[in-house]
Image (cartoon, rainbow, N blue to C red):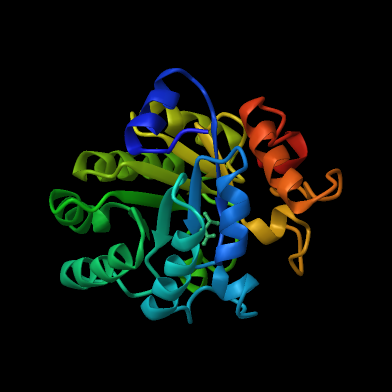
Length: 263
Ligand code: KIV
């Protein structure tokens, strides 16, 4: 497989070819992902849950993200490596720049930030300084207490319209990719049509440009399998095969199926 770049992902969107994203937190899994049919590796702050055993992503620090990013980088130079900026590490523009620099120097090729319009200036400043940015709208786990739990977002027409408007502002500010989490499938589709950059869904239906899953969820080893995920190891003979099966299922459109989606 070829090395992934922002241009190759844009070309896939233009050709209506779906791509697969998966999280990784260490060198060994990163090596398996490099040789599987996966385009993007995300060092997610979900490591707070699946690696550290915490009940949210809020305690995760920049130093921890940098440590895991460096380990993942050592295992994989083919997929695009995106790293989450953790809770409160981008609350101001100068924090966003200082902390993004730490993550990029650890090996990230793009940073991901959760939120809407309020991030526009930070996205612009990062992008202007050569740091690619992935937005993250819908269910934003770092705001779990403000959202009142891990709930499907954008169910009402007004909330859906606002999410699309804010995502477009981030695209105009310079975002290169957009994650949308836990929204009705119709909103996942509308968002992908409204943005020119690739939209990566998780619990956002089958019509986004790409899909992302947490590694431990798709291997069925998380404490609780989220409704929008699927255990690919159940029907595979090895972890390597399970990761490849996930990539293939995203590409051929068989994942996500109706039971993984929200109305
Ligand atoms: O932290 C993470 O793993 C994520 C994905 C769920 C998109 O942000």
